[in-house]
Image (tube, rainbow, N blue to C red; front, top):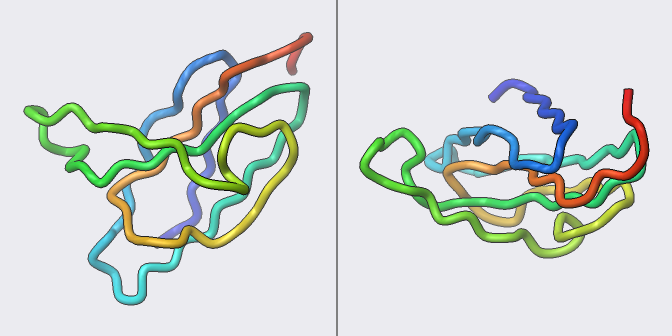
Length: 95
């Protein structure tokens, strides 16, 4: 799997980042990097994001990727179908 980078510049959720949950071993590194004053969280789903009849249920990740405002990095602990970044609070001018 190739490196993927997602940026969110408004209070919203990013597009889903699809992952290959069938990979063995399933190993995904995740890093949150803040360049301003913000609060964000990583969310995951086990649902099929490519099935138009399915509305994915997104679950908030555990620490260190739960709601926070400091840089964090780590290995994703279990197989999921997709991740996304949700920006909850954005303060001041970004850019």
